[in-house]
Image 1 (cartoon, rainbow, N blue to C red):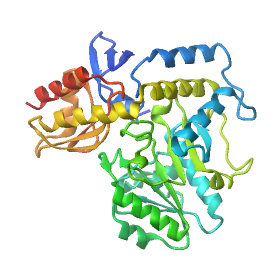
Image 2 (tube, helix red, strand yellow):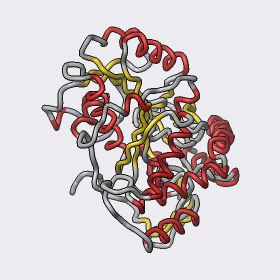
Image 3 (cartoon, rainbow, N blue to C red):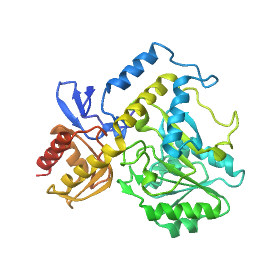
Image 4 (tube, rainbow, N blue to C red):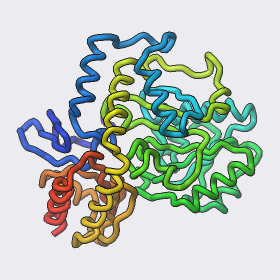
Amino acid sequence: MNTYPPQAVTFVRGSGSRLWDDQGRAYLDFLSGLAVTSLGHAHPDVAAAICDQAATLLHTSNLFGTVPQREVAATLDRLVAAGAGRVFFCNSGAEANEAAIKLARKWGGRGRHVVVSAYGSFHGRTLATLHATGQPAKHETFQPLPDGFRHVAWRDIADLERAIDPTVVAVLLEPVQGEGGVQPAGAEYFEAVRRLCDERGLLMMVDEVQTGLGRTGRWFGFQHYGVRPDVVTMAKALGNGMPIGACWARADVADAFVPGDHATTFGGQPLAAAAARAVLAVMEAQDVPARAERAGRRLGRALAAVPGVAAVRGAGLLVAAELEPGRGAAEVAAAALDAGLVVNAVTGSALRLAPSLLVTDDEIDEAVAILTKVLG
């Protein structure tokens, strides 16, 4: 269906930070399928795990337990909160946020159901997560959207406080607004949100779909800010390309769900969970948060020195290069693709770079050299 513009390139193969198209041309991938292939393309450990699982057990439904799912849940619980919560598996980031919204409503009870999120945010494209997304232009085509969502100015704690009334049950925020232009929240804002949620008896829910699992230089973006959320959603990097998402919640919050409240046929099924198990094992062995923090500093410094780049922002290896006035990001991204570099225009004036967390220094230098040539 006509849901994407015409596709300029057809990719047929990938390895590490490289992609090849159907004409045999090689590209340096600094988008990672929108921050998904965080270990690079065709990582051998992940490929082997998928092959082994495909020959062992593909599906049972969630009426029965499987070993990979149990092990991934335990690892995620440890990485988020040292074993203080529970995990619901699904197939995508939007589904993880749907689970969080439903959990908040069940936890709050009838009449206490409103979720407050920020303008500029992105939380998914289902009807509920679309309304949670703070981009009104995306809403209009699909009105009327489900009730129970309210938006406030990004990084404005006074506006958030004004939006809270007895119907509000939760606040849903990204630690770095990804689709909103790679805009970090900052510790001061997240600390104030946590205090406000504690004072008003609200859930603090953090959308880590794009930022989670090492991307920002910590396992999760909220860990930069010294707060502990009540609910955390994730997806993208968890399967390194295999569709899987997860919603973590503090144990007493998770207890609001009882059998029959929420379900999924395919969520966390053995093939996806086996991929996630391998991904997490490689991430821990390689200490990808530390790698992302170091490589992100190198990438940020190099981009800031490129003529035509006005500013650089982000965290770890989720980076935006704000272009000087008069340069359109979409045109620059298209020219970069022609030159063999995959990035995208995250706003009209900013390029997003989200390379593999295993990216090398030489690959960073090569990417910046291509952008320098394109912008020149």
